Each structure stands twice: as C-alpha cells, then as structure tokens.
Image (cartoon, rainbow, N blue to C red; front, top):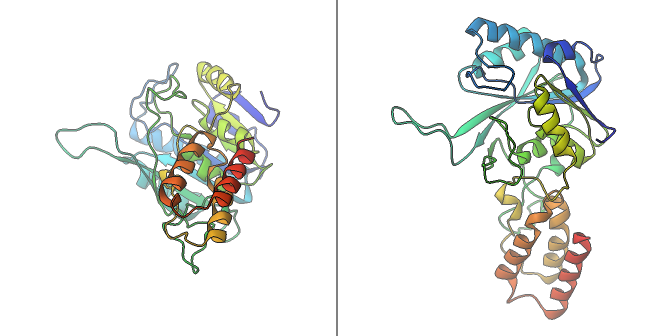
Length: 314
C-alpha cells in the first residue's frame, strides 16, 4: 500500500483522539445516517439523542485536527441534516460555505410519498475567509465558445449529478453505502492540494483513500469493520483505469469553436483540464469532437489533434 495512505481499524472517536491538532487539511466523510443499516460487525440504530451525541463528539475532534485553513464535507441523510448543520455552526463554531445536493436518477422507490433522488453534503470551513478552494481544478466545460467566457471552464455549482455505483459497475464493492469516486474527486481537488493530508473518519469501502491515492494526496482512513479495511487494501492495489463515475458535462465539447487555432488550442487542453483522471472516456470525447467539427477540421488539423491525443494516452 502507498506510503501516504494510512488505514486505522478502530472506533472513529477513539482514533480521532490520537490525531495531532491542526494536522489535517481536509475531512471528507460519509458517516452512518442512523438508518439501521447492517455494516457487518455493527448496526446503525442508535436512539435519536444517542446519535446526536455521537455526531457532536466526532465533529468536535474533527475541528481540533483541522488546520486553520481546513475544510470539512459531511454527507448526511434528510432526517438529521438540520441537526448536523446546527452542531457545525452553533455548537462547534465552524463557518458555513455550501449546501451541496448530489442528484441521482435512480434510488429507493416509494408508493406513499415522493421517492428520494438526492443526498446532501454540508461544506464548512474552520475560518470564514482563509481556506483552500482550487476553482481551476474543478471547473466544467462551457456550453459555447465566447470570447468573454473563461474557456478553462465554469464553476460546477452546488447541484451535482453523478450516477450511483451500480452493482454492475466494475468497481462496486460489498458495502451498503458506497459513493461514486467522482463526487470525492471534486471535493478533494477543490479543498486540498497535492501533498496535503485528507482524513475520512468513516472510510467504509475506501473511496476517499482511492481518490487521494490517484490525485497525489496523503490520506488517513478510520474504519471500525476489519472486513472493510481489507476491502480497501485490495482496492488500493487494483490497477487504475479511471474513476468509476464522472460528471457527464466533463465530456462536453463547446459549440462555436469555429476558428481553427482556437479550436486546436482548446481540444489540446480539454483532456488535461477535465479528463486526466478519466482516461476511459477520452475516446468518447474524441468521437464528440469529430461528430461536431469533422466538416470544419482540415487534414492538417486532424493529424495534429490525433497526435496530441496519442501523447495524452501515453
């Protein structure tokens, strides 16, 4: 396993107490939602008050270990998210930045009430103004080329559409709440830098650690279930073919790239800007370029572009 990746098999609160003050740049985690899910050696079924006490106890430790410019992202279900917000802001004194909605097209079906189609992620920082946010690393491609647009891309906004990790996905593990790597990729790229340490106190199937491994971050994962620790170790040793999910907009080719030089420059940069962690979808992007601009691409330009693609693929 990579030197920069540390796995700890322990209770989250106990393990957090052993992490030094101000040593973590980013915490991103998907804690139990208290929905009575079976996690192998433990079940998520605390009483209401017990769950809130558990939440405030681990969050107090989380704030302690964050650097002064650190951030925390916490996934949470609908029943407890308002209480989580209150604990973060009112009780432990962190600063609200964003309420992110992860929208997905398939989920639990209900016949008495509306079927849920989203999860929420609360993003708080330790300082109101001094925190890491790498906007250029998480931009999404523009719909159109315009001279006034930043062709490096647009802010992705706070509603994110990623597919679930379906059971047919090559990366699906035997874990009841596995989240898509694309979600964690965006968070980790936005709120940490290469060489920083990222912490996941409820690391589960190891998504946070896998993304850190592939983006040059150090990572600490805490997990109470030894089977999930072993699952994560195996996952970290698997060959990397691209993250298991992507914002479909990342493959988007802007309209109106009519000038040959502008088009060539843009296409040359697109893969590095948007797809460097997704080599498995580069062919789709190339096909879209050809579909949209084949009639406008000269033989010289096409050979130039294809040569650039070959360089990227190496």
